[in-house]
Amino acid sequence: MRFIDEYRDPEAAAGFARALRRITTRPWTLMEVCGGQTHAIVKYGVDELLPPEVELVHGPGCPVCVTPLELIEKALEIAAMPGVTFCSFGDMLRVPGRTTDLLTVKARGGDVRIVYSPLDAVKLARENPDREVVFFAVGFETTAPANAMAVFQASQLGLKNFSILVSHVLVPPAMEAILSSPESRVQGFLAAGHVCSVMGYREYEPLVARYQVPIVVTGFEPLDILQGVYMCVKQLEEGRAEVENQYARAVRRDGNVPAQLLMREIFQIVPRKWRGVGEIPKSGLGLAEPYASFDAELRFGVANHTADEPTECCSGRIMQGLMKPHECPAFGTRCTPEHPLGATMVSSEGACAAYYRYRRLTVPQEEKAVQHGN
Amino acid sequence: MLRSGRVDFAGIVKHVNLSYVPDAGIGDFVLVHVGFAISTVDEAEATQVFRYLEQMGELAELEEREPS
Image (cartoon, rainbow over all chains, first blue to last red; front, side):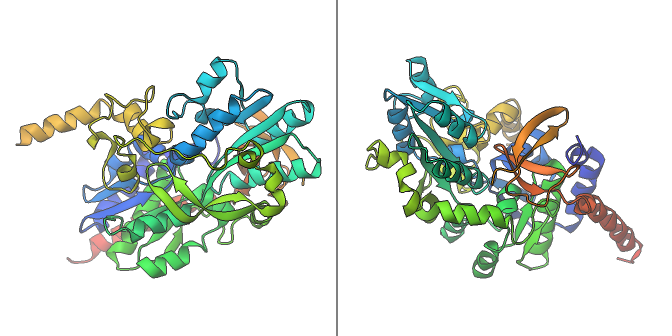
């Protein structure tokens, strides 16, 4: 497929790997904050092409993974109510709450449906005026314009039986939370290309100035990631800290202005809990006052419910770049994609799920090599 | 705000909302997320990765010629 296949060319990848080896003189730790990039890195073995000095750690880049437990509990409660048709993207259905998940609610007779786009949920609401149709609005800035449009359309159509359960998160505040942590090992970021195609990259300029870390807007094909890593390492080696754009074919500095305008109309910035990380100020979107009647939390009276995270899961440390998935004692044993303990094993875009899928066989070999070395 | 169009994903054609790419027209490549086109692919920028690589190759040759 055009604009995809050429970015997986092995010879070009080897070229970037050689170039990286040439410029790397000391250890560097870079973080990507995009589940699609994490998945591509592990699937294509991009990290194995890098010089040993360059380490990639995997940030909180998967919106399904970071959706807090209390929102999952609210979703489960609403989905089980009579008269409700609960719509969600497919990957939310298996995310575990405290005792159950949406798929189980569906199996017990709840009307839970997978939709491809939030507009499908609006259509369901139009066609079924006797049902309360609720859409689980999960996602980063990439998904927010679509959800904003769903609410806008519902408002224009005067739909009284449509609402959304909002769990929107914003990437730059999470990056800042990681950078400001005294434990942080991150020396450079690959910024998520698709988030930036909506938001542009002006937001990163103050971060670069304040924390003196390079941020490279990066796509998520293997060559994009390799070039992003190269540009980031080059800045570090030269002592520069700037925002650069590797993904210029899809990202402009100002982003998608019409999308941002509707996002600002429908949503407002709110504090948000991130599963495995905790609450981050100004890191989420909630419905703006004029659209509060579309807020499922208010409509179904679940706004004040809270739930605490289980303690055994290490996903918070993994998403802050402090450990790798296979270093967790529960990885692949007590925690698997079928029975996840938490955030990063839940979605296919989560770091633990990616390691489980593509690295299960290689991890023990690495351990064996270490033992022989000793 | 309801502009939509047919987008071909390597043979699978889907209806996609084009509200956020007002300049996109027939024959353009778009980036699609949950049923919405969120960006138009800039074809001139699309070869940038390979130009960068070529440039680095030339730089490497120059570096090799320099006495170390």
